[in-house]
Image (cartoon, rainbow, N blue to C red):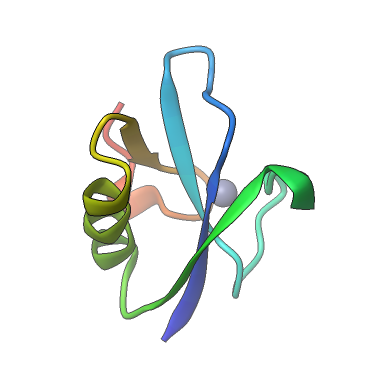
Length: 72
Ligand SMILES: [Zn+2]
């Protein structure tokens, strides 16, 4: 299981990016801008979990630490 967080702030394209807090990421948002998503088996699970929690938001995996889940 790995820990994932989502950025409270949108990227310039409107996406809220998910980062892997277990492996870490050079683009990890500042702690005050992170929302903890808890532990998941994969970034895909973290993305689907986040989409349920924040159904009004555009959600995407980070290109650098969640590349398998990066779509736009
Ligand atoms: Zn990342």
